[in-house]
Image 1 (spheres, rainbow, N blue to C red):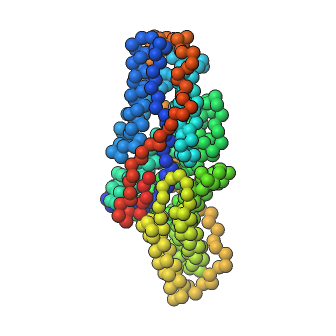
Image 2: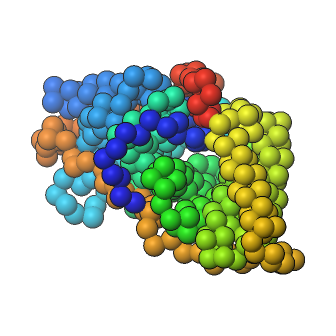
Image 3: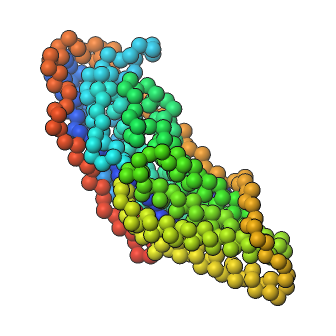
Length: 422
């Protein structure tokens, strides 16, 4: 999609469901006796401080992508010293299993998983970084007067998030020694749903831009149809999960599926009308009305469904009301023209949507973790003496150690912005 340079001041009519961030137990990285030199101790101190700083930024509403990238690059470059071999061999780093890490999941409340594995920390923290980008996109999309550059930031942030999720799934989660428990964040079904949802939401931004620039209705219909298919695929991926955890999320995905099918049939109707197929256009708009009514019913169900994530009344938001008016006005126009000009029969069957968008489809932005921090030298690594570890292994968490949820900023939607922000 070409982003032409013009003022982008119309309200960006999006509303995105967001699950909570993952929470984690504090990690001190205190290896008394094991870290035998000042350089080794400094690496541990830097790990503790950079981890704490990164966790603080996740819930800081003033944090921007540049701030987050600096913090993530520092922490991950230091953490890599617990994972990577310094001589580029395939041999495991001796520090990989020295520290226990505890993380909750986005769907399963404050019931944590724990693994004594630095790779578990890498993928769990990486997962939260991806979630932060989705929440940042949500906050920007909720601004009442969004600029063109901010619209691009929403689009880019969702693609970055998709790329991080994809990289974790393909390159790092398979390296975990302990298999991922079913229904947990790192399981393929959940990761895939997050990836697809990010792509679908980024395409919503593309569709809004295409409508703003008055692009061909055929392109808008095709993009809407592809976006509806994305949402449907994300929902199907979650279908075998416990509805107690995934029910609310699935209502959102169902709702968006119906909403963008309504969009697709509405703009397809405009294409048919432009081709003098007024009867078929009316039938397409009638189908659009049906999907919109389904979406309206799902809005109510979404608001009433308990579970993790944001709570809102999407049917009251601008993004929803605008489509309802568009369908109504377009259908009335088609019916008027058919009564005065075309006199065509309205088919009993809705037109088959076999639409393929050639432009504007979203692909994840490729992601890689940063290189090993320069403070990790062969001498620093050698200064960790694992024979000095205490026999009772104090790195293991106490059974009653609580993982407190992250206090996320309570950001309410701007007046009439059409968005609910997590």
